[in-house]
Length: 202
Image (cartoon, one colour):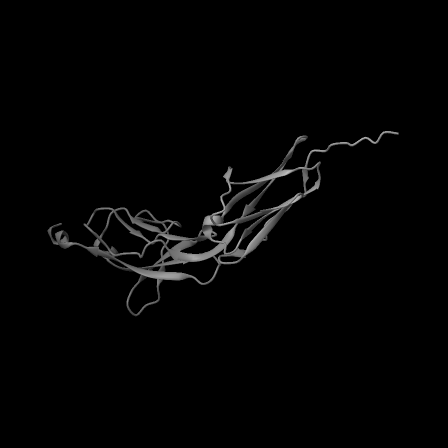
């Protein structure tokens, strides 16, 4: 009898990144085939582009390939795809890498000066993963902060902006922005809305 060798295309065993990865943690993920005629060639993509080994280390053997990241950062967030290919065909598997990062200011919030009757925008630009929610409060000396909600005169957006449609004299003062995403602690900053010298002529 003659032995018949059946050639198989690669079949990747499903895999995933660990969940609840925090910034700075190390992680590795294995892309292995359960069957497939050798040689099998592995390639990795991140967000549809060839994965470069600037932040990752890729180790490949006959039947598996490993991606390792020593200290994950928000820059590593994305969709990772492993391709396994031989003469008989190709298989692929994609997984999402999410990194939990505490809120941080993209730039330090600064005071804003505005004219009476003009629009004014206070900004607390923030980053983190999941995306932090920003809340605004009004600070008055000797009193607890008063949480602000969107109204006809202002918009308190979750992206870190507080928009006054038409600045009035009572709007002048100090405001507190707080960013929180459940990772680490909340961060806060104070921003003042000032009325410039032309207000006396209005």
